[in-house]
Length: 184
Length: 303
Image (cartoon, rainbow over all chains, first blue to last red; front, side, top):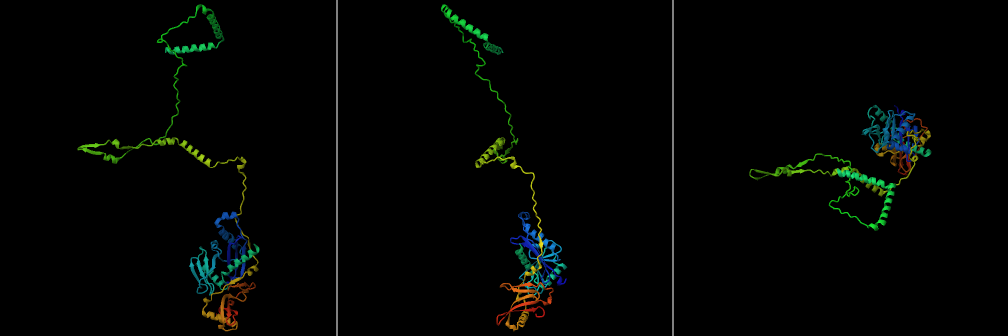
């Protein structure tokens, strides 16, 4: 895969303060330029639904309702979904690898592309020179060895030469805020 | 036997006499007899005088007769036999308890070759079952009822329930129950905004840590700053370094408030980006006049 074909998907799903649950997915190219952006209308569960679903309501909405709806409707095919919410790692799918990505204050690794295993399913990846490595957390069911894992690391490293790979998540949040402030 | 038949005969004569007294002929004869007796006394008494005949009887031979009605001793009462009360006895066998220890010590030798032993019956301790509980069992229902009475009295004393009358319609449940279906499944609307909106959201660039660069790299950065700003290398000071910058990549770059972050708006007209055209953005300051200067330093050629 050349870096021109790299497509990274960034997804969020969560509750706003008063507007219910919302979610969005941003697909960027290797430069971090947006290719596709989908967002959901706010979901405000009724009181009966809140009582029926109980404590599992938030997880159900984030996984089975928002994430599932967004991934089904995407027109660009993506293989990696980068998220910030740990709950989204529990989304069961075979087509997309969900990775939780977050910035760190750890010292840089020796060179771009180096990885350091923090613990099982959790790695530090150096994406660019003189920058902090990003923290990658895979789903517990994901096998962190083999060709599939190496391809993901290579894709993120190549994209990291052009962009900060954890930066678009902030854009997704700000875009949703912009949409909510205008329309909701 | 003779006295019995005599009593029967007397009682029969008496009954006949009672019945005859009630007839009209008897009453006429009685009136006529009384009238004749009065004539006899008023007409013949002065002539013949009144002679009362006195009979003398020996009390020893006086026969005393008693009627049945005059009997002082009433008939003995007839008692009705009640149904027997059954008592449930749980244990028919009454065990006895023999204190063996005392039995062993009860033998004593008083004189040579003579054994003296207390009667063994004195050493037997009979367990007397308390049969009083049977009476408690027999009266259990009565006792329970009394407890209920006490309980009810207590409850009544605490609160007197107020019972209101109501009609049957008030408590009748409707057979046609209205069933409401709640929509549980949640399916959101997924929308896609205009693409221009996405380019209105800037990219936030944060400065790199200068300590992560070697001294040689920093010297080249200073040299680049000095050359592009037409001054000496010793006259410039590097303030911030940002990576992955291109002239065509961003359409607008601003500083985010008083922070060192840069707000960079993506250039929507950018079609392609060459990897070799990415630079470090250097923000520095001239030491002589404190003017902020900037430059782009290539990753490979300059450093």
